[in-house]
Length: 584
Image (cartoon, rainbow, N blue to C red; front, side, top):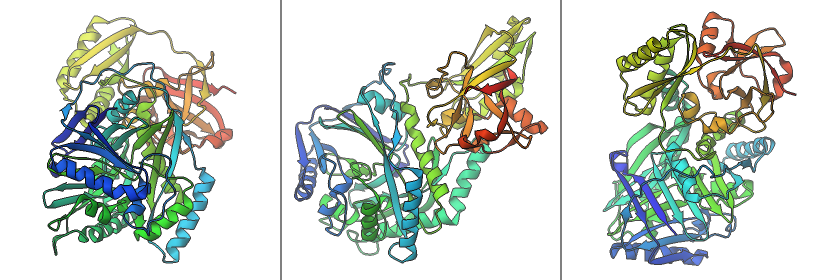
């Protein structure tokens, strides 16, 4: 058994972190029945106040231990509450490169789009009838995993480095939580909750990214979704708060995650003297952001609609420090492993004006964080641009440098344009003749390096094969920006011997790009189109040039609309425009 905690300090907005490791616990506290949940929390708090560290989790199905009106499914076989007790904390371990043999997880949906649409109709009817005004609707992704759980956690954490991450191996299961959401932080008499409600995809360019954040802050539906839960949390906190101490110091704050923007608000209070950890859970659990409002009615409908227990997902994962201070996350973006089976819940808040198309797309954006675990990769990465050098001329060099500068700004890499241009100039001077494929790389310190490889003539026509599964990382920052972290593309390398590349499609069923270039499609009306950036693809240089000149226009093309496609082309700056055909 082993445990890792990497929690942001919510009072410094993550500027400081609690990053610790723990060995085998000296004692384990386990609740397998509702009657045991409250005593386990009480024991954990008492041991923490006596000088121990207690790290553990509660399942969503523990809710009825705090209010008999909370309806859930029966448990999924795991403990309703589990805490490891530790006499001391250890330094965060050096992260070893994960084994390249770590297998990917082939995630599969447990809910079809048709069933999702039917459930949305039930939710809208319940809201219209006045029974509730918001519900958090979820479904699990399922898969199998036979690799090292710690390697999977490390891969996920590298793609979701902020927030409240925890790895807990209880012996019978492993909880890998990469949650960006704070449930509560209780320090002395002050308690802070930070509910997360409101989501928008990240933009494909810095300008589009900022526009998405601004839209999230201003769209009435997103603001309403957030404020409904803020009001619920204010009411919940008032149950343990000193009179007139509940306040909302920050409302509608946008936080950038790798694949989405999320909106949070702060609700804080001074707790009454004598308040216990059980009292806090009595007042707050489960967090309103993962139930809806009113909480009792929302949880009743959740039980009716969702066919299985949520488990640790939507419960609580946290740490009690020596002295009793406590921090718990809301375990969204959380994978549970047990007996070779992997499970990860995905969901969203549904209000009266929510649409099935928009919510289904939001689920796709949220699940994209799992793409980091497709294969094991080294923890570091470099920014990458690939250019053609032909007889001493670097094709489209200013555009590639500009794109790399944008990636540097996004990832926080040091950027020195003069240094980058000097590196390119030096390589160009050393390869004044012939055709070369040039790789320009930049590390986090801002140090560029360049490589050149002989380049043969581009083929006149190539064959593309259609991906046999959705490209789950379509909306990842490692798709929107070009880096050396390309394992998510390599997992889709062509399997047919005569295929040049693979045509990808996102979880929403929309075509995106190939693994090494963009795609152009001629429709049956004669127009050449290319998927818009919002579908999840690299903003290619060759693609942008043809859009600017008007020979291409952006249009979404779904996988089932391929019958409308009369011609294809593979497009990138290195090879140009290559006619293509789809392998039957």
